[in-house]
Length: 340
Image (cartoon, rainbow, N blue to C red; front, side):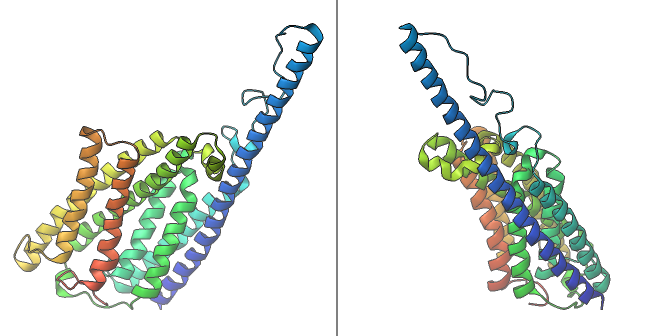
């Protein structure tokens, strides 16, 4: 019965996340409209300035210094659209954040009920790992939005969480089952929980890196017509700032993943009598560690900045998803989750 309530709460959370995704998307559309309005204001002001200068030159026969017409240029008081004014938040953004918090509460309730129904921690199989993992991703995002400049990630994070939850509820859903002997250990709490936390930080770094690539593209295009397709990014931090944020978040994830690798080896020795056995899951955990170690090392010592850095972060997160969605399902090994 508790498991059924857990499922109901999870579906409710998904519904709320879907509405939050729409609200965040509308906010991005509002930002885009604000940039368009600002560009139109600047162009109109420039045209009035040029016309006034021409009339003055025609009347006096010489160049006359003119004051800037009211409303011209981004520095003029009150000329910036609401979407771009510092500290100005749209209703859609506030609704998106509020719904994300509500969805998180429902999600948390679903996770707790699943654990109570199973009489253990709720991350012993792929379905439970997905449920808890996406909960942590949303939790990290909600903590991050305290910094208002990161709220633009709302559409990316809620969309990704919806996709992951949809896949897990359709493909990985299992009833509560007893733990196999290898999982009956306190290391299940420590090792897997830290892996979930690391994945949450890697997800945020991935989202920042994706937006960084788009922002870098917009900045490279300058004021060309093609840049207008990315005009909504004019109100988010620069590509350089996004890169710094992605790097810092990835370092936290890397530290946690390092502990995951070490704790997994200790647990393997307790369960199977060896620290390392080249099991497929062990190998891919190490591959992920190597990719992120290369990312951090290359950026810190080799000066790999910009797109190179972003692509390494994206490759690393792709390896995380491959490890979870492909290795767990299609590769046999000692780490095969129960219920699949």
